[in-house]
Picture 1 (cartoon, one colour):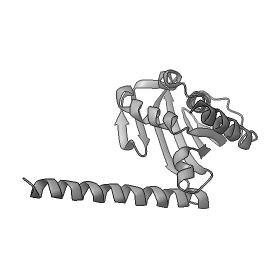
Picture 2: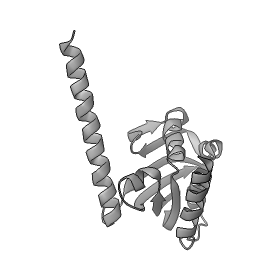
Picture 3: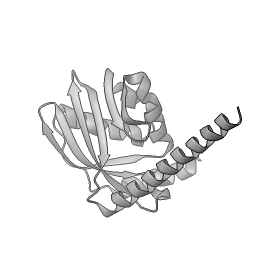
Length: 173
């Protein structure tokens, strides 16, 4: 619903308005552009920031990794559908790599009973494109740890249900 999305985006922007560190390097600018495009739901703009041979490591879709733009499209689409709002808290660069602490707010985060989580994101840049993107929760943050415990329990329940369904299908054959 567009009213829900507009309200959510406005609340997330207001809550994180003071979290705008200076970004002057190419990898830090790419990370900021990625967040801005994703926050406004601009799928094409998000994909345009990635190299064709990108390596993308992010749960849940690309938990181990996805390689190439074709494989990351589902992950990007899911983030947009989840009203995922990301805002840089701090960013450090070393050459062509930027690492940030990022405030994440989304429907899945709220469904875990937390307002936001903090992720550590790393992007590697080559020729003005993101060639590697990784993210992981900052488990030293209590809300992030609570979210991760919720996500792990949900994944375990899905795996158990899939195994039971597979066992049932095998027995019925």
